[in-house]
Image (cartoon, one colour):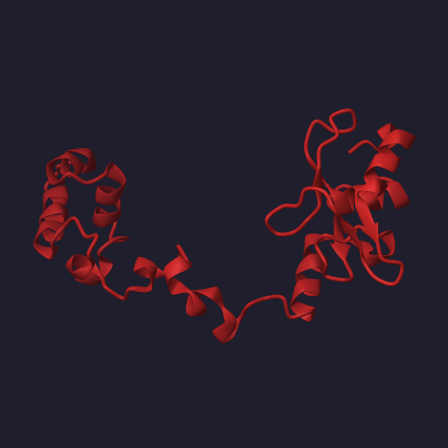
Length: 183
């Protein structure tokens, strides 16, 4: 973001999209991302979309040093009030998040509260494994056959074709990544 390109017209248009509460946050009133951050496009200034709080910082204080983030003291993603913003590294951002209790840990962790929505929870939280899982394409006997055929020299691609599974799935089976509890 080139601070030198901020014209008076741009500054006026930017601040016209902000609702100023003189005691609290100044909230961005135009487009926001899903996470609530103000978002704008000004191709004369940057070929890429910009986050409103970063533009606010640049308007008030100048260029943002490389590797630094613009963080919120108020924890309001839509806030662009310069006095509510500060510079920090990714480490500072993580410490700030932890200090303010914005990290979901323990029983508040999404893996525990909504396992069906978490792609990293095995089998979407169903607890079913192997051929008991309703999406399973193979039986335990077929998995054992794949592994024994691979040892005899049949390659993964041929095994995938024979058992009508993807090459990646066959690879994960022979490497003991998938179906590892059924060795």
